Length: 271
Ligand code: G1P
Image: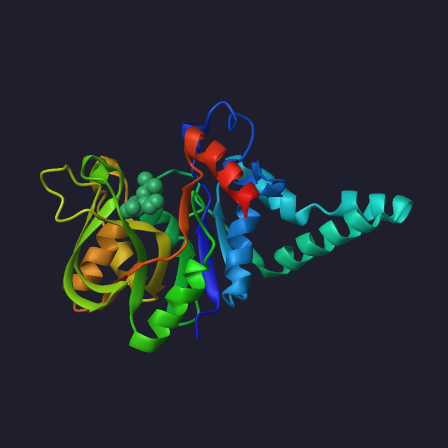
């Protein structure tokens, strides 16, 4: 069973400046709902019971959003407004399932994952990257089903344009399982067009095994000087661990860039 999820939230959000100069990008609203709540709702619907947020001291605002509830209590006592009561109930529901760890230096996604080691109990856990929103179909739910059936790791994936490969983790396929699922032979973080083994990109949903922590422990910084989860995954594959690339059915929205963020709000409003 996959019951735990982790969400790296320590990123600086520079691609969204000036919106993020004093504000956490994950708290920016889209169509009247805070971005991170879309990710949490995906988790809840996929059966996740506990979510570990990896934040930094610059992102304490995220903890406040879910934990500082004296304000709600006061207003509700005074006004008893139904809408506020239901908003507060939702926040309380999230609060119950969230734990926090800290990554104060931006050393990369791999380093962020390593910070959650003491919380992870089961053989597999889910990781969601909050810049990547997938709507219309619950990608995490589908991946959990695939992981359970095949007893292995899964990464969400989609085809990208060849001239865009250096923005993503790119993988090559060893064997096709069916129309939407492939066993991964190798994965490279942000390769040049010349070095890219394909145009299959990794998107921010991963089902990872607990044993990835031992690979992360001694991992050296890679592309761009950061410690990448992709490099730990590569080590797992080399050690014989099976990983499926899952071509998800939903629609991908990039909330981490300004144009993507604006477009995401419009797409969500159409739902
Ligand atoms: C991260 C991963 C990359 C993956 C991407 C998906 O990159 O390192 O392999 O393709 O997420 O969004 P980042 O977006 O943090 O640069």
